[in-house]
Amino acid sequence: MEHIVGIGECVVSNKEEDVLKTFALASCVGVTAYSPSRKAAGMIHVVLPSPLCNRDIAERPGYFAVTGIPLLINAVCQKCGCPKEELQIQIFGGADSVNSLDIYKVGRKNVEAVKHSPSKMGLRIQEADIHGNGSRTLEMDVKTGVVKVFRQSMETKEGMATAVIEK
Image (cartoon, rainbow, N blue to C red; front, side):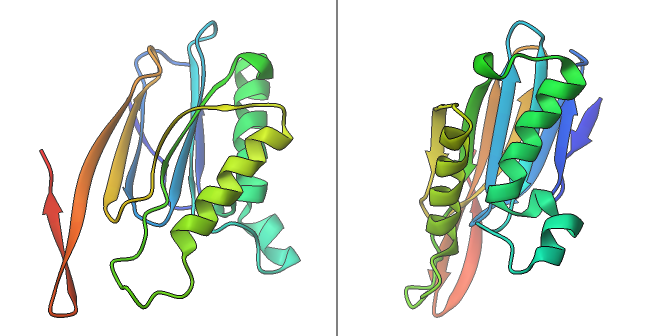
């Protein structure tokens, strides 16, 4: 069964027939956690590095890197009985804006926050497909932990961004 991971959402499964999928990671960062021994997987779609206020922590913990990564790790470990130490962590996205005047650099800030969070939990990132200026869609197979990445590059023409799908 296909499970869609929406913006700011976290999904965990230990059903080998399941696939976890998230769409359109541009400045957002997709983080996956996989337990090879338990055949359990989790994915989160992180939007921003940290919450803007305390209410955001309670209402949207998966939306932010600082609260979302612990949410993902704890969900995989608690729901599927996975030892934290064996989790294989991968990160995707964190694209730069196609606007050269972008002063916020959200993609870069998201990547920095996402990289920092697993290390605080004693984990390391095994794979990273980050930065650039395109969008990524992820599809993770729960049985194998393999993550397929589908890319959509962004080109600018006279101030307009145009999507170009890469096959």
